[in-house]
Image (tube, rainbow, N blue to C red; front, top):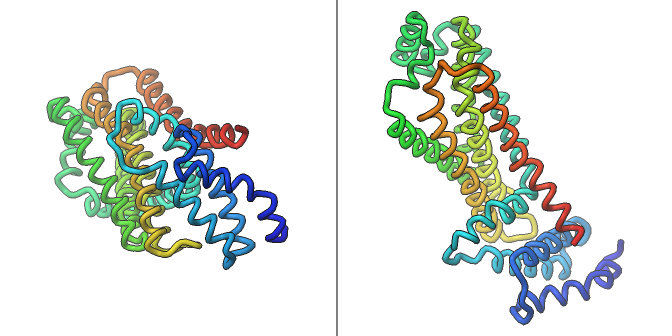
Length: 320
């Protein structure tokens, strides 16, 4: 449509939003989120059809004001933290869901490369996993307990160490998005190749099923949220590489905040994954149905939270 038609159609709505955002009209956080989503939709349209117009600049400023009002740093109460995980984050993540698909595709590609390389080069697994780990695991296989590595440390110490290490990996995967996304892709590549070669190693030693039913008790959540952290790093990089109608500095600050929120969404899942690895995975004697149930339930929760819930909340807010 022509710009003048677009303005006339929406100017009353924008004026009401401007009054609300100026603080003259009380509104709750869900209402602010709805305004922000509506403004970003209008901004995307204006940026496509009237990229250099004053209308686009006006919407850019208004959307930025809404964003700042929603995400202004404050002392978080338990209620607001729960609201973030149940509502604010999934609704925010709807905008960035394509980055999760990209991150997942990259990870699966390099995992396949890792498995392929291990299958065609007998020394590749040792190069990636190290001689000490390979020799220890082969010794465990010979003893009839290929997953014995998960029983070596005390459950609590293993839980704490694994959780802290995984959070560190996620933060590094996100922060290295500052290197125009190349650092994030490198971290994704390294972890994916390690996983692919790791799984092929057990396949080659005829204990593939034993590895799957054991490792993926915690690995389902652990690997998935590392992929989510990769998506956060790509979001950060997009603020540098694709600022759109924002200045590069404005785009960087906006994407850095949103990327950090994506990383924060993974923290409870890393704690759960660490708990499973420390306290549950070590019980290799558990029946197959129980281990598969844990893996399946973990996968369903992740699919719901990162794929289905964002779409559900977005569609619900569009109808309000």
